[in-house]
Image (cartoon, rainbow, N blue to C red; front, side, top):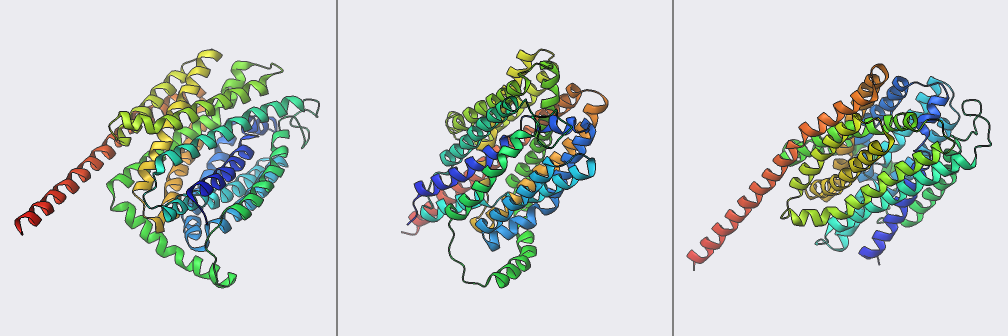
Length: 438
């Protein structure tokens, strides 16, 4: 019989393998694309294609996860992602990179909302009163730990394989070596999903089950959009997901060329980039773990916590855009990720409290859809701005988006407070009626 503890360790194991393998090439993959002839505008367009693929497929694949089973969809996602990353490693032209980014977009759309929804619903099935916040915070910490270790390892792997042919001239080069090492880890992840993600047995024949799942998708989509349109908190949280996606895409697209330029052509550049990224994930993990305590300090107002740190991220990013020294730029970069860690964990709590269990995968997929739609705008638009003007201007614009949008979190907090007051009034009226009827 499953317990909340067993559900947690299974989920955390899958989560760690997923993000560790993802992070291995993360510190250098933009540099690898540049070494193979891509400029910032082209890389921004490729990232936008990736985001657009996710936007188109996000909600239908989330609906499939609700109807076909989270483990099956997660396994399919890993298979497609494995094919996508293998294609990336073999790419030397823009059309080949397009295929790689399309496959990775399909894989990410399939993965989004499947294992995460399985985790939350499995916990609630065992204990409907379970406190999700600390468990979601631990999940965020595990994610950032895996990302940090992966980033450091990836940077070190580039250094260890510096004897390989120069980048841009062969498939197996120093910059491509972390991606090659990641492939067997992703295969291990598929095995872990197969054995650790347990769901109620399904007696339908596979063909019938898939047909029914696909047929149910339109209804799931209608229900999910109806739920969103009638919920003021969800609407604002989705708008904030779009803003965060736009900003995060600009950071992920531009930080490697920016810090690569600041560091110069030192032999340890790849290692330093890996350390820089790893520390950003470490401070993000600290932000995740601090989020529940910060929420308590704010009198149980998660919207207020998000508003503060969302706005701080914007101010810090504007400051980062103006830096020309490595040390101050690195400190501000890390503080941006610290604020993001606080916001991600607390925002996840707000979102999951608004979603019914039977629509959790669909709604998490809608959130991811909006986030990647923002990422599409950020990658294509801010990538173009950075290529034509400067990275600093692109980051300044992204910081402004965060500063303006933080007021939406204040409105989320106000709506939740109004709801609480309304419930209290109804409860008092019911108590008074019961006393009067005696």
